[in-house]
Length: 110
Length: 120
Image 1: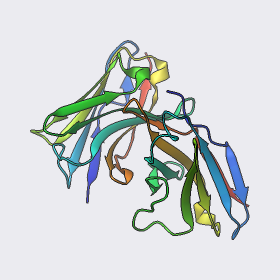
Image 2: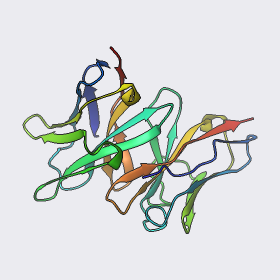
Image 3: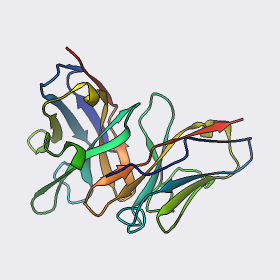
């Protein structure tokens, strides 16, 4: 199972929007709505920000939103804030009853 | 509130077995909802899901293809915990290992992480 493909880095100024893509295949992202997104500041465990493509857990700001089209899922951070600077990973369930993570994207706030 | 506490050695010799345990509080390993997972992270491999166990009238286990021949994940109902064993380790198995619960909202609960180095 190959990792889902994400851009290595994205950046934006405070208040701007950034979007991170997560490209898989018809055996994972394209076939299941069990796509989730994780935020990981340095030295900490990942924290779920989006689950089932577009749902936010309690406590996650509504600046974070998710979507999916075909084999590609996306995470958008609107109104970028300094505290959003972190690594972000997507994850998907697969047709083999396993999970696969994305390659990770570093978000920088300029 | 679910809490996961990992324990196990931080150094393993090549060809030996890596063993970690994840103790659960605030939930039960025998719960009929959610699954209990092991995930690792290294600079070269990123985040990598290794496998899971869960109970739905009987115990199930699923493993990543990359480690399927070497891995065992077992529940321990007596101590409300689950374990990871990875056999025949090499330096490429050096990583931070996490246990995590996958609830309906993704990998919602994580252990503190254990850095395991494979070196002689």
